[in-house]
Amino acid sequence: MEIKTKSRVLKHKGDCSWKGVKPSVYKEGSGGDWTQVARHPLVAGLSGEQTKFHLRYFEVSPGGYTSLETHRHEHVVVVVKGRGKVRLGRRTRELGYMDIAYIGPMEPHRLFNPYEEPFGFFCIVDALRDRPVSLVRKRGGKGLIAISELKILS
Image (cartoon, rainbow, N blue to C red; front, side, top):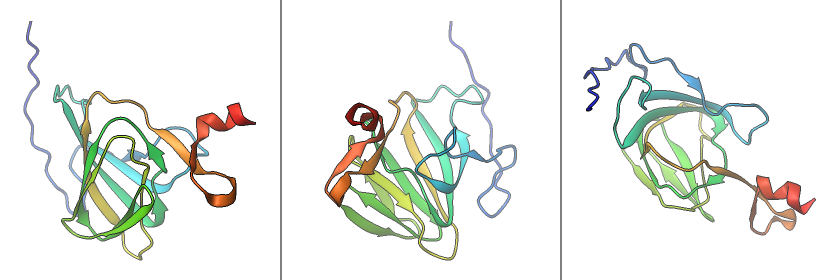
């Protein structure tokens, strides 16, 4: 039996918001290694879509940043508002309007906004994907370690 999902159009309301799409918290829970990030699930399976990908819009407020993390899945970021920076491994790169960042599997990464205006981007990711692993800097500042490993090491 094939399930059909009703096609739809998401009307842009201006300032990177869409009719019928409510922004949500970037990640569930508190005490995360991130701040001032909003997620807008555009095509993310919430309305019955059966795509093999999800399309989300993220907006990082001035001074905000996503978690420093790694995972097996890849994703693509397309900047559509303001400017920001992306950390890819040990490198940090500037991102501006219509720049694209490809984030490969297991690459430690973080997006952040050191500027005065909001930094917004579309993120395209596999619908079926592994959970990210949050990272922190090892003591002495050399290398990264998974937060989940901190309990084992203590």
